[in-house]
View 1 (tube, rainbow, N blue to C red):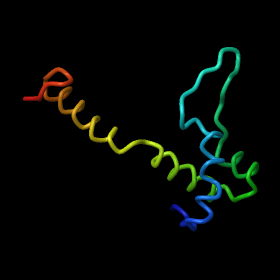
View 2 (cartoon, rainbow, N blue to C red):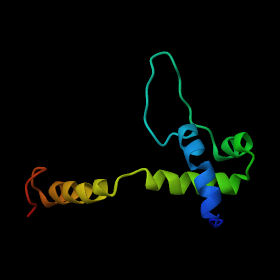
View 3 (cartoon, rainbow, N blue to C red):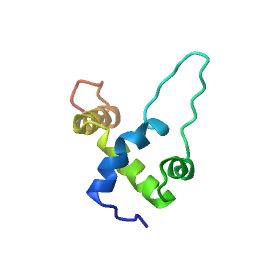
Length: 90
């Protein structure tokens, strides 16, 4: 079950947590990237694993622009409605 955290705690660590996860895709030739686990993030930041997990989950959701959800709705309608993307389904 999620552990509620204060807005202050979230705001303090949000920008530190996201770069440590696989939340964003990136590729640098010759540089492997493996996002850290919640336990590894917690150890690096000095918080509990539950706090690190809650911050990560909320921050990942907040990092997606809400317009993407509306656009995805249109793409799904087109895909499952039999129309091409950009056309109305039906």
